[in-house]
Picture 1 (tube, rainbow, N blue to C red):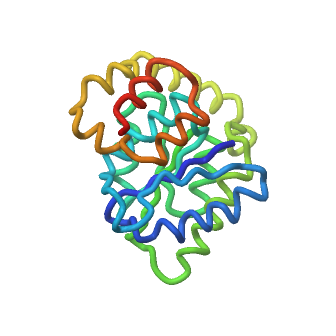
Picture 2 (cartoon, helix red, strand yellow):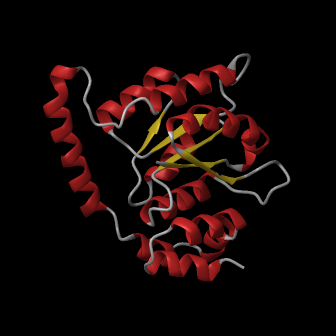
Length: 211
């Protein structure tokens, strides 16, 4: 599985800490980590809304299989990611949230609070979150006796989202183009799309916007 990390501007300085903990857990399990940025406070700024744009592009082109994102509280990033098609983002504060989100909701993204409650031992909490997140393939249900109804509800949710969201290419062409260009015009996005993205209208359109 390819896991992409996306930080927004208020928490860019923590990118190194977060990606190190993510790699520490993910890479021994055979997963690959893509660091999309922001890499530090000097990097080109991203808002949490732009995090949603990037997450949707990466997931819909299959350049990434899972997104780790967040902001100060994690709430804005969660709302932004869920605003875009092809993204099912959970709000995760502690390890049990990560496990239950994967087991019950089987989503493809999480939003974390990187400021609120992020104090002494925060890197340990991150590590345990990533361990629980990646300890399951997802969708197994919890508790086990609820497996069938939970899997059925997930299929219902997926079907509803298919109807209630426009195709991503329409969204990308319809939103503010300066907002879009400000998000995608990053070397890390070009590299991820060129190396891993499935050929198609979304990939071609996004690459055309990157200098």
